Length: 219
Image (cartoon, rainbow, N blue to C red; front, side, top):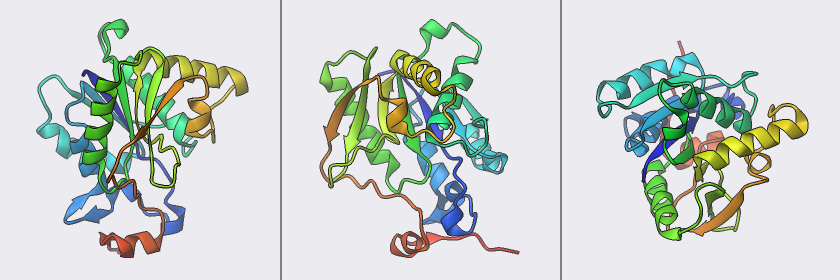
């Protein structure tokens, strides 16, 4: 399956004292580095976040597959929320040289602070491949153990994503502070019940302690 990848990495980290969550480390590696590895099979990757993420992205790009472009971009306005970030990411990918109509058929969307992004991406891609649903109108969105949709761990048809961005933007005139579910309101969602997957992310000091996360040392 051909896919592009959007890594949403631009949150404020306010409950962690303003720390850039993608730069938190676990077992010696940043969460962003793990997210990049999880989508290493993508045609192209865009990280939507602040310039302080550039060093990690550059480090990944050194060993990236031939022909893969790895970008960093920013949603407008900054900290505009996940829907705005995904829209900015898709726009950056579509601005790459080449025929837009020949872009990857699917787009993977993941958060940069997931604990197990590799397992999640593999499972969601496999489910999308085997579903037989139309990529032009479908998003494959996993459901956690409590029945909640996890759209920051989904696969969506690239054309469906473009249409969703246009539709959601037209309704309110902006995607600022819009949720992912608002963005996907006009998309056919295929709910994926994926057993034994960990959807945990890092939001609070309690999460840091629970999952063995290393906080950066302040000067």
